[in-house]
Image 1: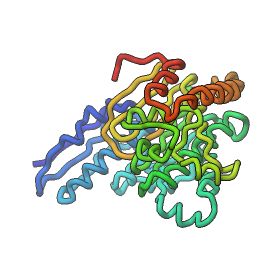
Image 2 (image 1 turned 180 degrees about the vertical axis):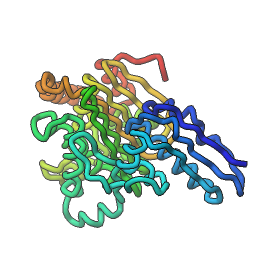
Image 3 (image 1 turned 90 degrees about the horizontal axis):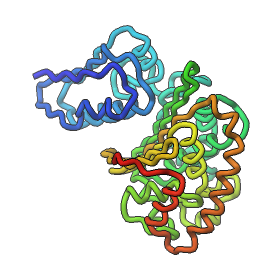
Length: 342
């Protein structure tokens, strides 16, 4: 029996991928499976990588099945092929991940072997080996090569990628970004296949973390890090993990777009003053940022304001030791209303 999975006209929302039900498809030896992408005309990094990851998992689970992709010559097919989307899944179509050069308007699908990154770094900080790529992502997100907003995002991407290499215990890190000039919107996705946020936060002596959902809230608190106090004391100022990177990024990005963090079975989305908790079913950690670039110049001062707010809030939450999940929820609620959707 042949199985045909027909993709929708757009891959721009998680729902577009989940509605395909890839994790529920059953096949037997001798079957063939076709991904029919002829109707697909548009895609965005988060949904594209989500589909790619689910498709790769389906292929991995059924090594006895012949998988194919059917496309037409369209702008989306050419774009997806150029950025490495098809070959990332495993189809011999277009460029490979890391092959395209990228530009101010896009960062192609890039994959990193985490064990190889650690080996290459040797005794040097891993962050030094990732600056080129974190700068590329920051430029796509804020449409600038310098300034306070560029510095914030370059730092944050470097820390996200560095944490994946040093603490995720995973094998692969994947990044992908796109800017749409006509809309003045940029989107960046970074994910790894490691143990997840909650496992990393077990090393932090300041908090009491029992679930993935709690861990996501702790991860974006000011001053919270997956690095132990002893390790933080031994890090130098430039490459040290202060725990403020995700806090400032989540606050700043959500005011002019969207910030999403996903790990294990939970996800947390912050956008325009609203927090939404949702269920998830993928291993590792995902960071998804969406940002209105036409609002960046008017919001530069917000970075320092958020940092100062964070310093004050960090002092307050340290009065309770270890920090309880209720304190994290309360602090998050002081900045974001909770959505009814979960």
